[in-house]
Image (tube, rainbow, N blue to C red):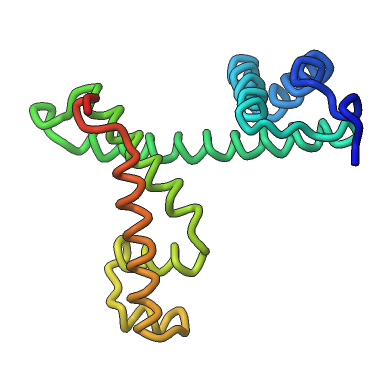
Length: 175
């Protein structure tokens, strides 16, 4: 069991490692602005979690959080880019407002995060059905699972998507 002084405070952790983390992120991202934002987000995530690492593991712990945030940021940018490419195909008269675009992106990010939390086989089953248009029988054959398992996985993934939609900001920005 560690003593209260063995684990640094968030302020001590910040003052000791913020500069290092921001430099590490700047080298990884090749952008000082993104590095500054992600360094702040890393410490915010740490603060919200309420869990501070032991001093010997501080940099490894901060690096792990920062890497996760970089992955989240990369995935969000991919989703935004795909959405913008889809919008570019629409006639200008049918293009959604900037507010609607932002809400759709937030919803897509929430659904993507929900799917990423699922076991890989459940996620793959859902994607094969929804994006590749495969039948449950085809999915079962491809993945080597029973059709009943495909149905179970589809239900689990669909429920996760609905839960993400429920948690997403409401259309129009009001509840």
